[in-house]
Amino acid sequence: MMAQFQTYSARLLRSVPLSEFTKHIEFEVQGVPRFGFVAGQWLSVKAMTPEGEEITRAYSIASAPSEHARFAFCLNRVQDGYMSNYLCDLGEGAEISFQGPFGDFVLRPPLRDTLMIATGTGIAPFRSMLHGLSESGHEGEGTAGRAGAPVAPLQQAQFWLLFGSRHEQDICYREEFERLAAEHSNFHFMPTLSRGGPEWQGLRGYVQEHVKEVVVDRRDMQAYICGLDKMVSANRELLKSLGWDRKSIRYEKYD
Image (cartoon, rainbow, N blue to C red; front, side, top):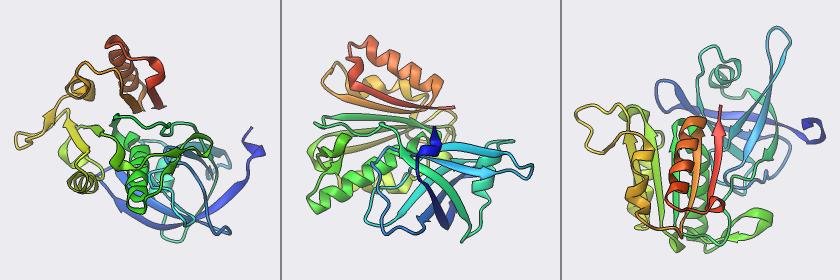
């Protein structure tokens, strides 16, 4: 099925550690002046193992759409996982092959007050969405939603990012999100730690334990959830139990 799509080549520009096992890696697509995608979409990356086996893995784009042919991933090293370690070990200038973009986990107009729920590298599509909305807001333009429909910039709705991590050092892009919250009074960054140390002054526990703090008794919001299957399912069931329409709950599960 993937064969019907164009295969691109991208060159590694930089690789930055975010935590002990997580990296932010940036690429530039080769041979094209611009590479278009909608914030929230993913790419299918191909690699060949030393044994000659072709492996394909899907990764959400962690950067905002731009006028440049660039994109970024947020990756965890997976023990015994060939692709994640292959990508995390790439040196500057190395090239990868990929297809895409794919996926419909994108912001849908009209944009309403929005709760974003993520754990681990499930933060990737939300970084793409929030930076895209922030940049669009500064430029006075919308970010493309489904079928190119305009989505209002960040200033036109309330956003909550509920981000679950184990330890404080695992909060990926923490400074970026804190800066975004400082610059936009309608963006609320809510990191919560399941194994926070005694010095942690923020939220504790799993993300689903703090959903009601945001939604209270509202049913006119929309929610976007990204992370491992168990977390996604728990939050979907919680929101439905609070009377939410399932069409207001969009999600993407990671294996």
